[in-house]
Amino acid sequence: MILYNGNAYPLAKSKFKRSEYYFSPSWRPVAKNVSGEVVVLRDGKVSKYRISRRGDKYLQVVLI
Image 1 (tube, rainbow, N blue to C red):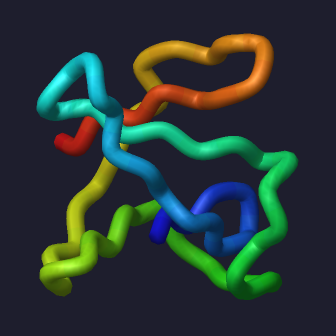
Image 2 (image 1 turned 60 degrees about the vertical axis):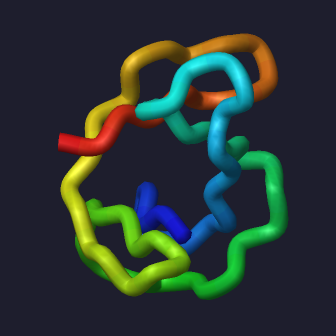
């Protein structure tokens, strides 16, 4: 899950790069009005992130 612009979105792991994830702000948010800018992975790890690429449909995310 990624907290982005006040909403929490599901996060998907990239098949092409091991350290990259992606999501789309057009996806239905899991939660709204959430503060912070972090990624919460399935194993419970919390990490900061940066947007590495902005495509037409998805935003590529790299963990810091």
